[in-house]
Image (cartoon, rainbow, N blue to C red; front, side):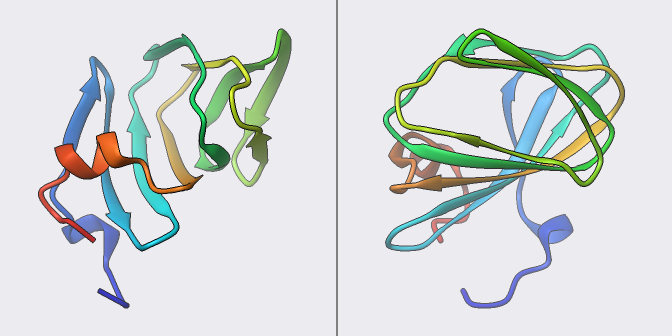
Length: 113
């Protein structure tokens, strides 16, 4: 799969108010995520490096205890094993990139990459 249209990908529910679609290569996972207003992603960490790009909306993001107010067009880098959380202030569209591949998301995704 070398060319995609994200709106046409099957979506999965990650938790209440948070859903997305994922594509995977040998090295990366990319997620096209929507957070409904008020949706909360609790504090967590994982071994994957992550870049989160907020395409549109407003998001309260906490990274290693530091709070950021993200608005459309901003990105944040999350190093491996660093605790982070997020709360959608408005409807948010996010592109998340993970390295290495998120095997857990790959197992949940109808499109296997």
